[in-house]
Image (tube, rainbow, N blue to C red; front, side, top):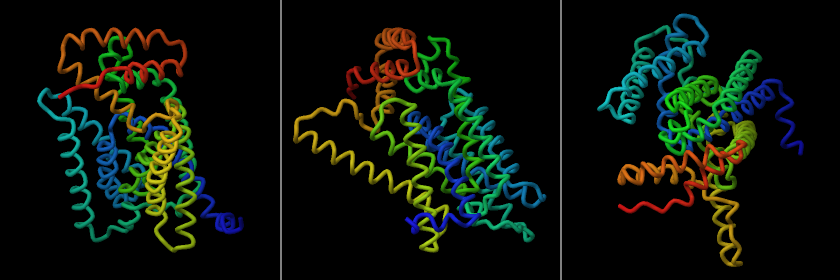
Length: 343
């Protein structure tokens, strides 16, 4: 036990632990929607797009987080404006902004001889340097995220299933999408100091992916993802303390390791259940929610009649729910009972 507790007797490591746990909760809550909606590339691009803003803020003597926020805001607005054009591809648009912002950041750094901020800290984070002001910022960001996630829970669920369902129910899918992108931006900006702009996606995706092996409801996935993220933070800090490794990279590696362990355990449980003849209906596969949503889209696109029929049925199933848990189950059940699409 002293092996686990002694390192956190240091004030700076205790602050790193508190900050890391706040980041883990942030990433666990928002990361669940990122995994469910297949928005991993957006999170990666947003994280890389912070570099020019952080570099300019450091040159002007401003707080780096302010520059990161401005840079992320510019990228979010740019992606949103270009994506409205009828022939634009979202992936191509995000990729172009991702490369452009990253290249601009490197140019600023390379041309500024007086650039005093450690580039390594920007890219890979410095969780050990988290101060009280950073903890307050993370706490405020977490409060904002939790409020928005609760308020927009139903629009997010319907949007994850199908945008037409959300529109049929009057849940304003475009606004829900904008809010979700804003949440991803907020989490990336608030978390980059802890694990860096290059590694924040690890905490955004890995705990949620690992939690998806064992949970069915969205709130349960968020809660388990937050716990697994906190475990990754503790493991990463201990590895960094005793192994003299980079703390941010150790945390990100630990989070990815949890996915591997979770997948192996889930496969082992499935094999044991298959041998004993037990059904694992209460433990769905991790990719089921995303695959179901994708199958719904592909079937509707290939069969207009099916689209016109399935959207009202799905909307009716979702609108009949009287609680958030029923709402989640309706979307999952409608997706799970749907026949698989054929090429």
